Length: 404
Image (cartoon, rainbow, N blue to C red; front, side, top):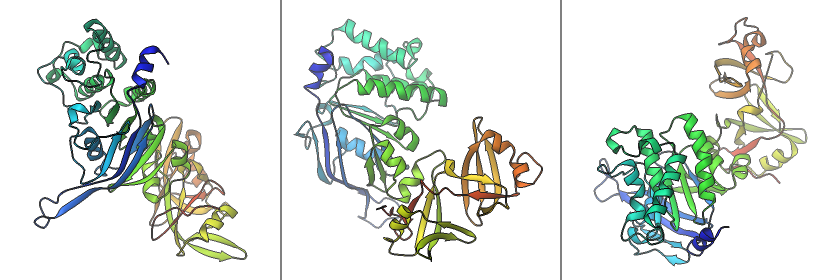
């Protein structure tokens, strides 16, 4: 750690969120005085220098939580502490929080460079570099970030002359030039094209990881969350569903809600029932029957109901000829080639599942299904499920059944 970073580390410390709850008026259609609960008992800890990726569907409460942490909203209950300091009653301008708004919130009368410089020039800024950077050093920092975000050539333009993706990068530059006690990034790359998004998420992660402040990266994209977070927090309907490392979240989703958010495409969720077969258990759905491996069978015995949901990742499914022994019969619904791989959607009878397969196999689906066409749409095909790597969820609750 260099001297400047060591000095910054004395200011940065952990973020602790305890029991945060928030309600808003129900609005049109609601009873007079009724409240709509948007956050419920949110508890999180983010270590100094750690990036916590916060992911969940639109309306899950991600932005509201960020606004509470920044001091722009007051929680109904709970506490927020930063470096051991209770932030209750501390106004937004004194929290030393660098907040990237999803809506950009650029100053329309300032150029790209002036917008990026603004937090370093604010007379009452706290922890944003004010009083520590001379004008030349501030300009150099802005140049570095504008170059990183590939918008240095736009530094003399006003926001009104920029595209949505360019505006988002200006807002990102204004955030990254700061030296705060906490970074809050609300969907920081959502409006960029795919190529630039893939490049910048690594660059931004690298820059955040080199600073001592904790950071929260909010995104509805579960795969983005897995790629940028040291840990991932999944939120749904205002509640934290799961917090863990990307590997833990990917391999062991605690609920069907979490499973639906992660993956490209996400995990297939197949409802079915448990059946006793000799000394073991099988998962059944119509003609589909799968003998559960010992670990999964042990988990299944903890189920309170025979109704369960089997989770299987698309890349674990194998397509075989429709008459293959032990294979479930399906019908090819669609075939989407993506170059190295293809996503094949299969109709299992009132249920669509997706298989992620190699391009060579996908291009030969017609022959595999005996249809004589490259696509094989509507033709029968066999589907083999793996013996390992499956997740079993309780049907009524949607919660994962833990293995022994």
